[in-house]
Image (cartoon, rainbow over all chains, first blue to last red; front, side, top):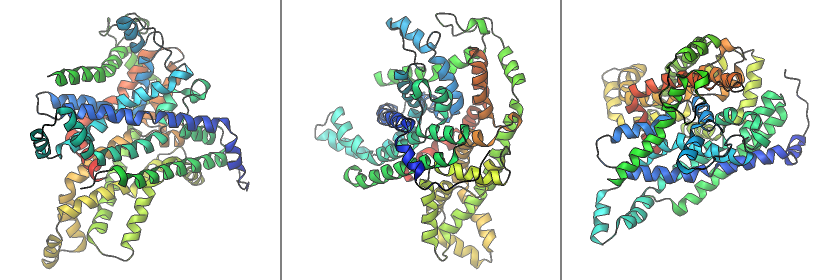
Length: 250
Length: 270
C-alpha cells in the first residue's frame, strides 16, 4: 500500500498551486467560517434570555446543549434525512407553513454550504451559550445599577456593558471556532459524500483525507496538510496580535 | 415573558430533530414517505433496530469504543494528573520550557500529524488494531494537564504539602492521598469531556480500522449510510443514529453537572 518515498523537492507544493480542488476546498472552508459569527450572535441572545431564575430554565439549557454532546456522525445522519429534498421535515414544513418549495439542500452545489452552516449552528449554539452564561454570571450587577441611575435603557446596557465585558469570551469563541471550522471533517464525510455535488462541500481536511487514504498519495496530502497547518497558525497568531486592540482586560 | 416564550419555541426547534429521528426509526419503510409527515408512527415497529443490529457488528462496535474509552481515560487521566502535579508543585530544571513546549503541541492540528503518524503505525503493523487509538492516549493529554495544573495551583496550598512532608509522608503518598482527592472534581470534569471526545471521535478510527469487527461504533454507523441511503431506507439509518446517540445521552444525563461545569471552567480559563 505504501511505496518507498522518493525525494521530489518542492514539486508537491508547486502542484498544489495549480490544483483546482485545493482552491475549491480552501474556499469552501473559508465560506463555512460564516457560521462562527452567526453562532456567537444566537448564542449570546440565548444566554442573555436564559440568564435569570425561572422554573424550567435548566431543562431548556439541557435541550440546547444536547446537540453539542451528540455524536457528530449520528447528528449528520439525522440531518441528512431532515434535509431530504422530497420527504425531509424541513422542506415539508416550508411548504406547509410558507408555501415555499424548499431547495435540494445537500444535492445543489449552491445549498450544500448553507446547509452545513445550519447544521453547525444547531450543533454548536448550546456550547457557546453555556460559555456566555458563565461569563454573564461574572458581570457585577452594580454596573447595571449604576447605568440605570444614569438613565441607560435595556439596549444601551446590553451594548455598553454586557457586550464589552464579554470580550474575553468572544475572543475565545472566535479563536476556537475558526480552528474548529478549519478542521471540520466528520460532517463533510457523511453529508457531502465524495465532496458533494461539484466538490462544493469538501473542506481542506476532507481533501487531505481523500488524497491520503483514498488515493494513497501520502506525500501530496502531507504538503497540503502543512499548508493547512500554516494557515491555522498564522490566522490564530493574527487574532492574538489583534486581541489587545479589542479584548477587555481587567 | 416574551423571552421565555422565545426560548421555549427555540427549544422545541432544537429538540424536534431528535424526536423526528426517533419517530422515523420506529416506522415501517413504506410509511416514511407520507406527506405531510406524521410524528407518531402508526404502526410502531422495532424491526429497524433488530435489522440494523443483525446487519452490522454493532456489539463489537460498542465493545471497541468502550475499550478505548476505559483504557485511555483510566491510564491517561492518571498520567495527566501526575504530570499536572509535577508541573504545578515541583521545581526541576527546564520546567518552564518543557511546559511551554508541551503547550505548543496543542497548536498542531491533527490533520498535520495524521499522515506521518499513520505511516509510523503501519510500520509497526498496528493498522487495523485499536492500538493507534489507545497508545497515544496513555501518555496523557496536554489540555488536561494544563487544566489540572491550574486547578491544583489554587486548590492545593504548598503549606499542606510541607506539613505532610514533616509528618513523614513520601513523595508518592502526598500525591495519592492529598493531591488526587483535591483534584477529584477537576478530574471528573475532564473525564466527562474525555469520554465525549473519544466516544465521538471519527477521523482517527476511520483511517486505522478497516475490518468491521474491529471498528468503533461511530465508524460502523457511518458506513451504514452508504449501505442504506441508496435504497432511501431512512428508518434503518435513523435506528442506527439512535443507537449511536443513546449511550452518550445517557452518560450526559448522569454526569450533566460535570459536563457543563467543565465546559464553563475550561472556557474562562482556557
